[in-house]
Each structure stands twice: as C-alpha cells, then as structure tokens.
Length: 139
Image (tube, rainbow, N blue to C red; front, side, top):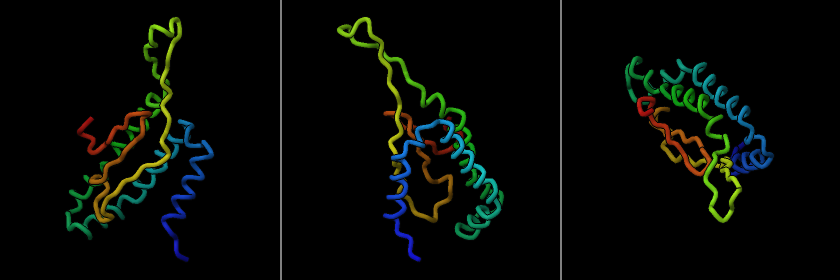
C-alpha cells in the first residue's frame, strides 16, 4: 500500500477543521505524547545519529535537546492562548478590546530528512506571532 503525502495532508486538514486542536489541553497532551515518543526512542535516535552522522554517543545526546523545547511549549502554551487586552481606539470609548490567538492549522517544515532532531526548527504558533525554538540555550 502506497501512502501519499497529499492524502496525509488532507486527513490532517479534515482533523483540524473539527476544531479539536483549539483546545489548549489537547495541545498540551499532544506535546506530552511527542516528548514521550522521543524519550522512549532515545536509544534508537542515538543509534541513528551515530550511524548517519558518525557522531559519538555522548554527542548524539545533544540531538535530543528538543525535549527542552517541548517542555518550554508545555509550560507556555496556556499563556500563548490567553486573550490579550489591547487598547481600544478613542472612537470606541468606553469599549475594551482583546486579541484572541488562533492556531493556523498548518506548519511547513522543509528540511532534509537526515538532519538530527535539534537541527530542525520547531515552530509553535502564537496567534499572529510565532516563536521559533532552535536550542534550549536561546531562551
């Protein structure tokens, strides 16, 4: 059976259209699942980095630094999703204004497949702004 990328993208778009990804608790759960998958496959990742890039084992553990990025997102996703108070224009007095961050529903990470995990950017949507996490030292 051949799996086409276009079919996967279509399935992901259909899932996003259900609105389930708007729930912050769902997002946190998915991040925890990703963190768990990386942690449970740590030895396989280290072996792959060693085989592909010929790096020693201790150096390969730096490639698993992505977990720090995931922890950062788990810690901050609730504040990223909270409505932000912004000033209303004078002609709208006495109104108040808020910006409600929304997920975009798509993220395109174009990269070579043989790159280690930490060499790839992880992008977490934050309303109209995005924070690109590269290395845990950049926080």
